Length: 430
Image (cartoon, rainbow, N blue to C red):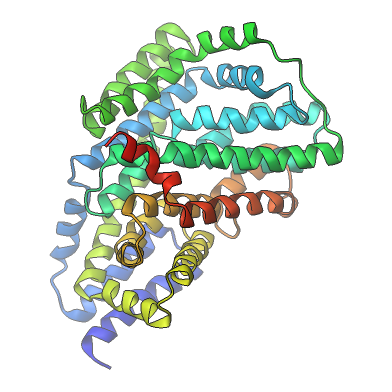
């Protein structure tokens, strides 16, 4: 075995073993890189250099700002207001509370950008509310966790910023625009699935539709929704970079949460910032350690080898596109979202572009694939959070989620083979 092949075996083998042993992903990535560099006799100062290089990026500064914005707005009392707005929009339908859950996740996801935050904040309110109105607890939890994935697609999403950086500087504004229609399509798909189940189980309807109530709730919620407009319009119109718009959104979120909604006091802001630091430390450690791993992959030419192996398997673009989705879905079952994006993007993006998939379209595909992975055992973090919030056994939640998996896979296939769904808005705005 050549030295290069030995180093690849050490890198990927040790990483796989540590994943099986349930090591924290950041430690698994860092230790695998350490073993690889040691086997090659390279100086260990490379580790420090690559870790600093990995997080020394102006674009990545948007990530902590977006997370801080989501924490401030999440603690600022907007959950109830967005639920009321969603209820005014779709609560009148059969299975109205399920529809409210899905639409509220679309609104809230545009603020938090996190499926976990969506499930934890909206789930604590909506799951008990749905159960009290006669919905099954497993169905209520399944709707909550699957709809939370809309927030990964609807901007501003810090995972899209991570993908843009990993993909070599793709326009964050284009990615933000590309997420709106797929997010709405996912919401529509889940609503159709919920409606069919609601009719079959005779779940209740809500109050009659009232245009007066709709405008009233829209007026109350507009302050929260404006945060998203500031980010997206600012980036798309060239007024701000993604990082600058995120910083402006943090200041705006602070003002809205403290002075308008009054859900957080100045004293409480420090508690929110403490929670942000906890989350940021995890994300930044992942990014820095993944940078070492990516350096090892690149120097060993693993992306080229993987691309040649996959393309050598078949030259049919349809099969290759399906294979890319399958790889990401399998990775989603065993890894969290951020490390998948950081590690898999340099390997799989060249293959995707070689069969005509636009990098922006592939970014949306990757985010949705990873979102589905958050709902699948054994490492589905959102699945665990939903099970805990709904107080329902995980096995029961997985069974109830099966119809919604089908809805999400259908949307994934549409995004894969109809690029206009993702690319229409970015092309419209140039």
